[in-house]
Length: 517
Image 1: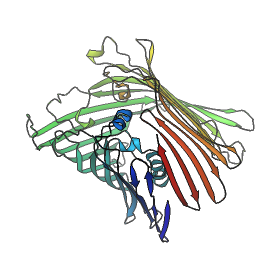
Image 2 (image 1 turned 30 degrees about the horizontal axis):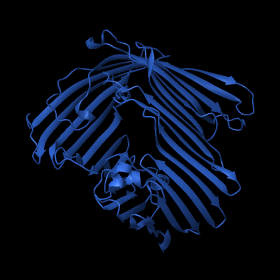
Image 3 (image 1 turned 120 degrees about the vertical axis):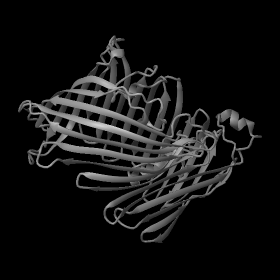
Image 4 (image 1 turned 180 degrees about the vertical axis):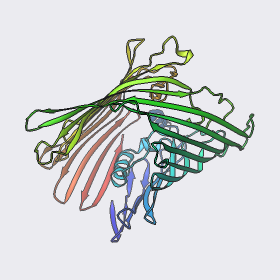
């Protein structure tokens, strides 16, 4: 890369890359900072790909790629601004030439992986997964004040599919406005909260239109006992549609539709706490909180077949269920004893299940047992585990595990495992929708990096599908980091390609050289 310092608050980096069989790929990245909260970064890459030609049959057969365009590019960028000290604005741009680009060019300085990490570090948010074919481009602004917030969004979709259909094209939000809040009612114990959502769904071809969704609710504590936490909430939801058709689309129902849904929810809980004194150097004392709870939720079954289907708001399932469970919280106090009020949450464990009162579930009313564990035993260490257990089949439906450990010098090891048995869609209540997974998934991922000797560093990453018995991605790197320069060797494997990359860097000036086999 070639670095150009434009001013004290802006710079430009040029990325000239050359691929032996593909050609020259120029790239550039512009960054600026005008204030602590105001910054932006925009990156672009372009390649007139000599391999992307129908005559290159070996290339398409070996990789399985389907794009047929030779002009390949990726334009991405983000910007954060706060206007008038109140309006927090976020811009996200992600435009790519085809559905194969991000998977094919995922290594190197301008590849997907490095770009994702660079933007995540700068803005606290990255990009969609490299396999997502609908790339989201959005402009959001938010203002919050005493118990209320107003948010306006614009969302455009870049459809990267090779054989994208001219019908039922992706939905754009032009615009989406959300007004929500919660306020006490006078001096009473009642609280009114609301969520108002307006969206104009536009598309080149298909059914779109305007949707107004209003959900006010009133909640209040129920004075059952001094030892019980109890509350009840009553809400009504009214959704109005003004349906429009675009292109050659047809709509057989009325141009205006309306849905009215009452909702009710109540909860009773209590909290028990005990402190334990261990006297060890690492943990002098900790507190264990136990919070058993029981909840009831009701949403009637309303005919929604005549409504357009844009997103999850348009299909709200009925509900008549009792949910019960227990929360556990483990808080560790300052081991030095210098600040007796300082504590951190070292672990939490939730176990819950629901009993379905709907008639169609009378034969098997008990829902799966859900358990979720979060464990942070020491600094820079995190373990998360979530599972669902079917009480009728006596079998686990789903597992999700992630563990990560790091230290002060930058060493890191991370392991992820996910499993879902895959089945027909389950008629579950709200909060258990994650079980509606039709395809079997069993995946294990590993990431690690370590300082192996003085200035030598090594890194590795593996993504392996156990269900398909296939390694989706494997990467390895070896870096020598001197005081003013570094050299990095990296190799990447996918089922379609194997790539080797050698990168020299000297005082922010480097030259990447990649060879794809």
